[in-house]
Length: 143
Image 1 (cartoon, rainbow, N blue to C red):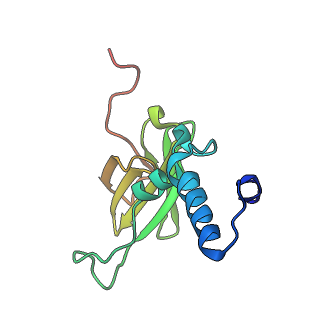
Image 2: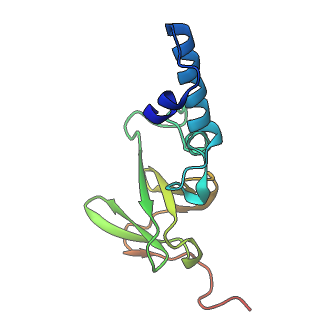
């Protein structure tokens, strides 16, 4: 921002011109400029709008409000989740390796959502007796 303000020609002489220059920079920075640290070089505004937002849900019970957590799918194609003090591994699929996901947990109901696109990757009911929750798909490459 400092470089952008210093490079402005002519320099702003009052607060209104300075505010217009800052608004131009903010718009460029957040909505038009691809960000190299974000997946697919998305703009910060695009990433912000696709992330799930906290909002009241009429279906949630007051006794169990649920939780939201972010994770990255590991090399084996799974994410981990602690439930009642026990760690569970949830299979997502190796095609999602190193993908940022959001886990939305409400009791035993779990939804795994792609953090950038908002796509529902998997929905399952957690089986607390099993350490690994398989995807249910056949093993090996598709024929």
